[in-house]
Image 1 (cartoon, rainbow over the protein chains, first blue to last red):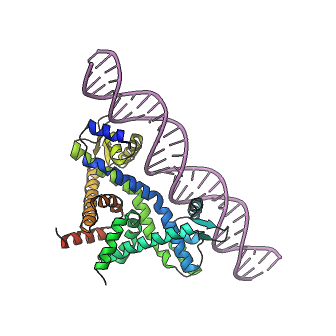
Image 2: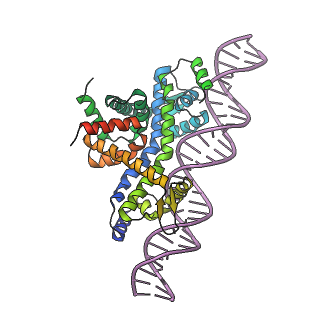
Image 3: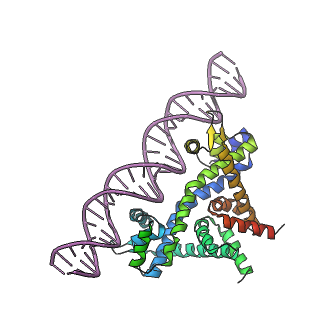
Length: 153
Length: 153
DNA sequence: CATGAAACATAGCCTTGGCAATACATGATG
DNA sequence: CATCATGTATTGCCAAGGCTATGTTTCATG
């Protein structure tokens, strides 16, 4: 939205509090665009660590989607230089991919640990963390960490 | 994924911990499908409360999208019996829409208040709450409320 | 009461992220 | 070494959620 738009809006009628949510909604849409890529990269890193390799069918099984869906996404991740593929030989993370995986996993772990510390059960904590992690700003993540430090086991 | 699939997967290779994230990812995708509808309904309720009416251009301005985008979404909300429209006369919530708006707003307020209580600044709390609210289970929401009661102002 | 600005409707286009169906490659095994 | 289960590639389809461009209604105002 341009400043001109905002100005004309404010002349037109009293600025409602709701109007200032614009930024929040835009950030939300942006997060939705990248969260799937983060999930993939994080999962691929996990699979390589646990099983030594990440195959399309494994990824598909873990995410609960079909293999063609994974193939399409891997193409996109390749375009973004996050993964490389050797046909019929598995998926590998680039350096950028590894970096994204590690920051993503760290955030995920903090969110899940935070929920557990708050008294949320293991299953709900796992499920909710998966959704929440992509919408947590650095500031909020820091607050979660601070809470964890202040409430040791 | 069927049980048969899961079984064959478990026979094929040792079940990795990652495999049990399936449910989390599926819930996440489900949440993504409905979160936009919730945002719209919540916003429409706000606009009606604040300005007496909800016009497409107001909704568009608040969400940071264009008016045709709003029009298309309103058609979908109409199909779902959440809103009614009187052409050139504004948007109104059905009873179902009002219910959804109120539960959605309550959740939103709790999440935002919780983040504020945790020490997160007002802007980050507002932005993050917008993204987080749709991924918070009843259990986690209850934990947030409990925390708020245990830490009064 | 004519008219022009603003709101609304509509059509066409794009990308993302799902799916099923089908063809091809690989490798274990008889 | 032939075969077949499994993994991978590819194609075509769909819905959601954005956009621009353009036509149509309303309504305030001269």
